[in-house]
Length: 97
Image (cartoon, rainbow, N blue to C red; front, side):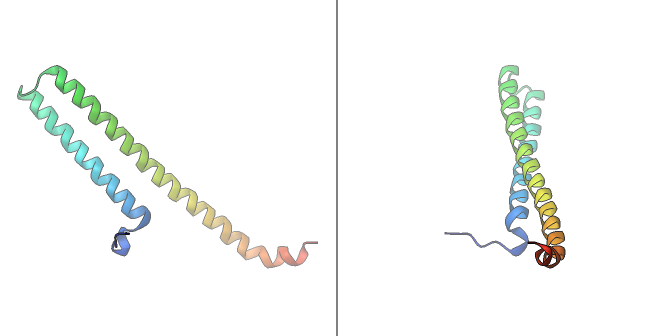
């Protein structure tokens, strides 16, 4: 069953919003982890392990955000080309053999 989302939260906008929320949560977790280490609540080994895990997850989110942005740019370029073609299509059709 598909979830209903407000029009502003559909497609690319919804996906970007979800990824940015995940990115924000990961950055907040990194901050909390650092604070735990500074207060000596966790040891260096645990900090290093969790820090690497969070960094890798954050890198994955950034890659996904880049892919969504790139996809949007590619779609905009394609739409521009289609529009350009549509403006000359009748002329090209009539002169084609």
